[in-house]
Amino acid sequence: MEYLSQKGIPFTERNVGKDPKAREELMALGLLSLPVIIIGDKRLTGFNPNAIDAALNAS
Image (cartoon, rainbow, N blue to C red; front, side, top):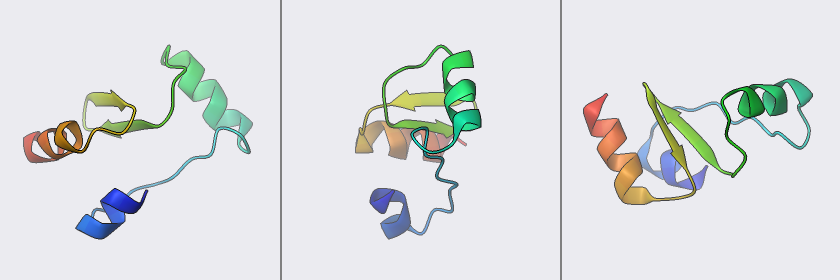
């Protein structure tokens, strides 16, 4: 994700379109919208820079 890269935040990208296990894990979380960003115990859906920054600051 470009936003995290620009901030120098390490992350693991998982493509649910190409990785069936990633898709299963997403569905097991009860989440269906993309993107999903998990920071600590926070699950963020959609792209919201303010929420991402707040979750990063809290972790």
